Image (tube, rainbow, N blue to C red; front, side, top):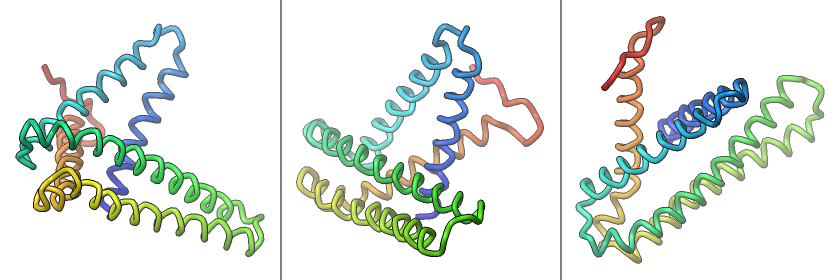
Length: 171
């Protein structure tokens, strides 16, 4: 769970970084936005290929699986966004030191409720996958998702190179 959190956090920072670059230089005529959209489309294409191969999805299975997966993924992303928002509010309240104990308790309760919601969604999504995939494949979706994220992060680290050096150029 920690790995997924940190991977999601890393992707969030990448997203924020690209968004900040776009806001900082409005003269770029949307090139950063296009670059970001292209990068996300590339990741999505790789994700589809990776899942299809790892789960050994037949064309029929893929046809019914992907709409369900996309719906579940959107729900999970929305829940993750709420969790991050509540974590930030809690962190800010504690750091600033001007919140009352009751306010901090309420913020912490919200944060942990959001974490519980994320975990509950994982289980609900597993049941959704069972409706469209054989049980063995449905059971593997979450593990394949983690493997994909780990592979993506490893590739990003390799391309970034050692700290303090320019990222490696790829063709």
